[in-house]
Length: 451
Image (cartoon, rainbow, N blue to C red; front, side):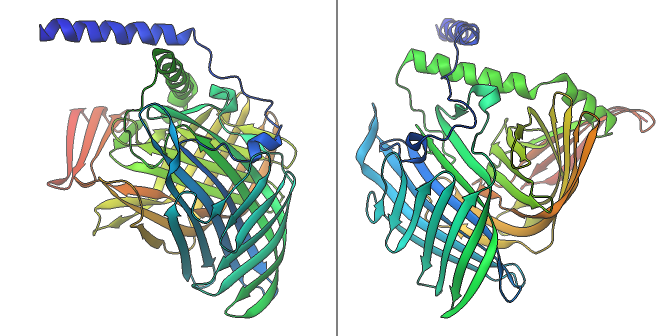
């Protein structure tokens, strides 16, 4: 009886897989459009936030970063997202790059609480902090009354807005049993002032803005939310499109040529986020999702968003390969936090190669406020330098600038676990090596083949 049930379930799954190939994802709007209905709120939905990140130079030469996130997440009733039950918060993070001193301000309440948001315009307010405007001009007032830091800036976009993964899944990004839409402005120019402990300084700088909204919380949980067969089929098509996008022949070729023919996975859930701004006015964004076994690739092909802009055009790379060149082990939580990266993006005849090297120690912040019941989350910040090049046919543009590495990791209850399969190729041998890390037995290696 059980065997027949399993066979039927497998048959249904295969049917959905093939049927999903014929289903088209939601049609997105033109890539560089940024209409007011996108910038304003999409309430009620599963999750929505607006975020402005700034890299500032004070008039005395000091380097500060400051960012704020206006956020809400709503409860799922079983048939739809609640319009009354949820959580909202404001988070302001400030960081002295010269000293590494980090300040964190966080206010949370039952939605809507102090959070004010509107449709068709960014008009956000949480207590005394505000973010207002429509593309390409914005104003921000971020008030951290706990650490006595206040920022006032005017921001002007010098790059077009972008809907991430537009070319892959028309901007409808699957996660768990839901989807979300992810928009950003990779580079803004900033002017204003900052008050630190009552002393005012004029500031200039560059910034990054993003707006995300979706029909599921992106808190790392994978609670099953199912409403219809059609929705499941559409979701299945999106995952198939991503899988096809990741498994490209170029990826295998590059791994062989770079003498790193291996892939490793781990049980970490969360994301890596790197934003860099370059001396030539260009900027880049990398968001690498880590989804846990078997989809959390430590190295190799990865489920990532990688874009580069010169201020006029935006390139989103269809193939992204990551190599971690240095990490930090945290004994208390038993995890490895990536510190330095090598990043490769491929798109037709274009290639982006970058090295991100951290220039500061990680600032650790453990998130006790998360709604996740099974894991505690850790947010880490590190300043860094990014160098590399962009190859566009026969043209090569050298890239050099500064950036920020901001990984978010959910600590697994059973400890860090990873599995790596590494091929052995001449002259090193022929076969493969399996490296396995568990908290119980540490690193174990198994070799199959011959030297």
